[in-house]
Amino acid sequence: MRRSARFRFVGVLLCFCIVDTLPAASGPDDATLLSSFSADIARLAPQTIEPATARIPRDNLTPAGYYKNTLWDWDSFFIGAHWANQNSADAKYLKWWVLNFAGFVDHSGYVAGSITPKGPLPVVHPIVGRFAIKPFLAQGAYLASERLHDYTWIAPVWDTLQRVDSYRQRTQFDPRWGVYFWENAMQSGADNNVALSNDPKDRDAILAVDASVFALREDLAMAAIAGQLGHADAAEKYLRRAAALRTAMLKTLWSPQDAMFWNRRRDTGAWIKRMSYSNFTPLTENLLSRNAARAMISRHLLNPDEMRSPYGFRSLSKQDPDFNNKPIINPYSNWQGPVWINANYLNWIALRRYGFLPEAHWIAVTVAQMLERDIATSGSMHENYDGDTGMGLAPTAADSPGGHFAGFVGWNMLALDMLQCEVKHENCMLLVLPQTAAH
Image (tube, rainbow, N blue to C red; front, top):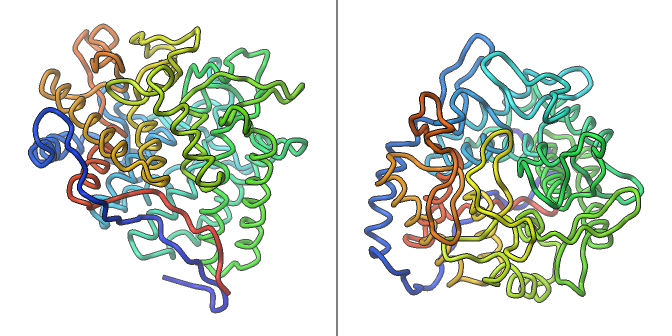
């Protein structure tokens, strides 16, 4: 590991925590659930690794099942984080994911957020637009390097990471407001998020909470990498930018009266008061005071009339007029109500960060039980679930090739990381990034 002689970062990405014993949820006891769920994930997990091809030079990570053979930006990040958390040597997959995407970055810093066996999506796709990669590449590079105890592999692609960052600054940062925006809902990954828009006449129009949080985390990861590679000035630049973004988010996107972060229109500044999963992403960072964060969680995330359902946290408030649990996957996956495991994982981090330990235990056990039932019934998993019944939604057999249920694995494996943390107090992956530098 190469370090600057006068500059190093304090902090690690993986946090291993001990918590008090908490009440077990109904159903099989926690240890039995962990044993059976671990075995099922061990059987399904290899499906997420695809061998290198002529176009994709290294083994790559895919959601498997319905999405087999296609790399996605945040999907692969979360899949790789799971592999790295289970075995540090397997952080190689996250490293290769970074290098695979880095190899497709063009001279402007653009790379699509999806790579197929034929190569990246077109620069302008008829449905998704530019679909530039989400801010996860540096986070993946940082996590892989921490787990592998090696940063030297990043040096040859450091300029590429900076080029990707510069492209994002030029195309997705609004200097007037000081925060970030998505081109459309599709680019965000929450395909039909009602707090955004897919109207081709209204692209780049909405200041987005999640885009700003992910960019903030990317700044922190870039700063950490720069420090490790000996680029002290660059590290300081990214830390200053992260601090400015924090301030702007609180000024522009936070409503103390509502105890909520909201998206806003770029043109008029009008608040978009639609409560989606994305409103809660700032809780993975320390933007709010502890009291303000706890109030937000108590008032909204844990409210059964809004985000909390019997089987996990919804992707859209139950009070929203567009709330539904339809099994949609084409042309958009449905983020207008169903329970998504990656979103629940981020909410679990928030619960642990702000001291809601019984609730963190509840969500880990509840999600694992739901997935375990799905695996027992279908042999695989679904990408999302009905929060009121716990039943898998998409993909359906009718959506799948040949009319046979294709399944889904992907970031659902994060449920195992949560369960291991809650039951055995191991593998507590809280995605904590260094916040400050030491000289």
